[in-house]
Image (cartoon, rainbow, N blue to C red):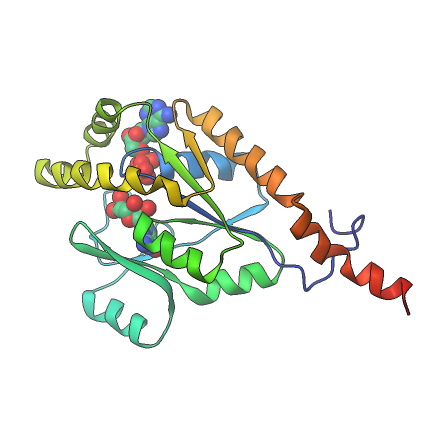
Length: 213
Ligand code: ADP
Ligand code: 5GP
């Protein structure tokens, strides 16, 4: 890819934000994306929530105490952070910036308040909202995952409705009816985004500069 468009090291990767209500399948779809493409880097968030069974520190999340999380904020280590159903979640800034600077695309799987903060800093990012086929299906996925208490499920479902209302701030909305279809929809979006005129202009500017010398 780099050679035939004269990509320069200054060309940045695309920042992709994937949001959607709890249980819609963001993690599942990202896992499927990982297995079918090696071109995308995944940001690992920090959180104060307790690890679920099978989750590993540094892989699924960086699990932090509230004090550690607060220090990360104070030291300006977070690109964004938000409180979600009683816990803090945030995106470590440096990894995202370093990845984009090496020309690689990166996905942030984050909730809507954080996504809006990222949009202010990266208006050129690609914002994708994942929708469930229906609200009853959403609830049955959260319940089926078996990781949350009844109270947490109720809280997450009530937040879900407000989150879906925020969809208007996103560039794309795709339904996760089947994981493989949702995955290929995201890949199609990314292919198209790579060929947006604005992104191509910055890639070929140095050709013009050479010709005019
Ligand atoms: P999120 O990361 O959005 O909270 P998960 O990826 O943990 O959601 O998925 C929640 C549950 O829904 C999991 O049990 C997962 O296996 C299931 N799931 C995800 N996508 C689908 C789908 N397209 N069809 C049926 N079940 C799904
Ligand atoms: P969960 O507890 O189910 O893993 O995540 C709860 C919510 O927090 C999900 O909507 C998830 O996308 C979001 N989330 C995960 N990491 C981050 C983050 O770094 N920042 C923000 N703002 N939200 C996050």
